[in-house]
Image 1 (cartoon, helix red, strand yellow):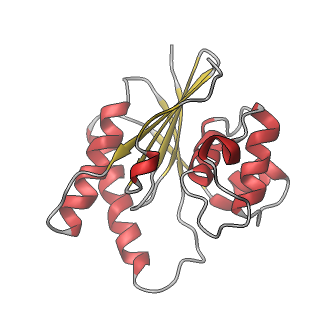
Image 2 (cartoon, helix red, strand yellow; image 1 turned 120 degrees about the vertical axis):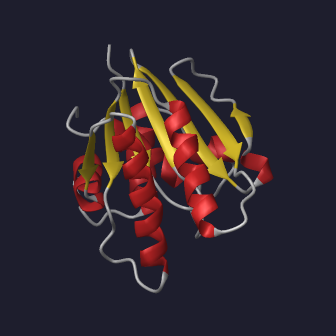
Amino acid sequence: MSRAVGIDYSMTSPCVCIKEDGVYGFHYLSDKKKFIGIIPTHNPKFHIKGYEHKPYKNNIERYNNIGEWVISLLQPNDIINLEGYAMGVTKGVVFNIAELTGILKLKLWENGYHIESIAPTANKKEATGKGNANKILMTEAFISSTGLDLFSIFNITKTKKDISPIDDISDAYHLANYAFF
């Protein structure tokens, strides 16, 4: 049977949500030591694990490491929804994000995976009803849908500017369920 996979892809905190038989596994990379390891949810339907980034000497090695990490989580016949490019990204990072994502797409293609690219606005609209929903609204939609309070689990306040990895988990969850809502 195929698994539904949602990938919220980034350089700092990519997250892969794997949905199989009503159970969700969340896997993300982080450079925050407190978020590395198995994160207790006290709910057998949700498993969360944080991984540490591998060391790298340059951006290409970094992008390759992240892509290889994603591939290591996948199985044949997985149905993959990958978050598309955010058109509002500015500064020089737009090229880095494009290179990072291009390497992942090549790895997925080389390994025989078919991916659907889901626009961030479409994912947000389906999850919250608003195509311009912010990170807090997306996380609140996750909590409403699952009953799993990521703010409490990770001890992060809604007032913090950086709520990673919970916003990445929320986005990946909604991507894994995209078109299944």
